[in-house]
Image 1 (cartoon, rainbow, N blue to C red):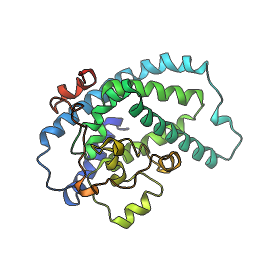
Image 2 (image 1 turned 180 degrees about the vertical axis):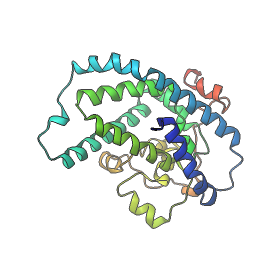
Image 3 (image 1 turned 135 degrees about the vertical axis):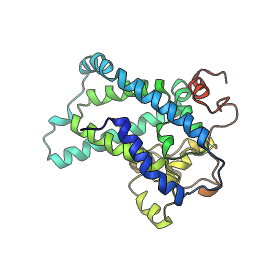
Image 4 (image 1 turned 180 degrees about the horizontal axis):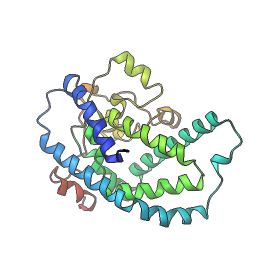
Length: 259
């Protein structure tokens, strides 16, 4: 029996929980049980909303986007391994670009800011996305997938890899320095992504990579370490952008709050 995506995500988060307990990067934090409940409720609402709308969105959007299809990656006459690599990298570039745009365009940032509201980033924080953000991002990314003709199989494999990696890079785990240095030559590590959650927006507007670090390095958005050092990093939103309460209702209303 195939597990639904939400069940797979929860299993991955559960697998990282012991590592966060025994090998935390940031220690001495206050209890986050209440915050965890809010994160999980928002995650559940977002996943259910997207699951319910998934079929309808595809039925409406795919035929529309096919009319402006540019070319089909799957029809390129190149060896299958090279086609897979090209498709995988193209999807990751799309994800990087979408993440960057969500920080630069005000209306998208208001939806995305909920993800940065968590001041105690853990593996579960990978679920913290506003349902409106997921729907809008899904539509925009689906558009690019269709007009670029990216094969379904590559999209599915990337989705699975991204689900695992998203939990990993949000996890509050301390990797050995040498391992972190080696891994971030290729993929985003927890320390690298944690810098992206810095309360300082000059650091928060960096490290947009989803899986690979190549795009941040190539486009000048890579920041190796926060100015405070990883262990003393303060995460969250600046004053004036924080939700009134870190509850599922406060977070759901955050995009509509006056600022």
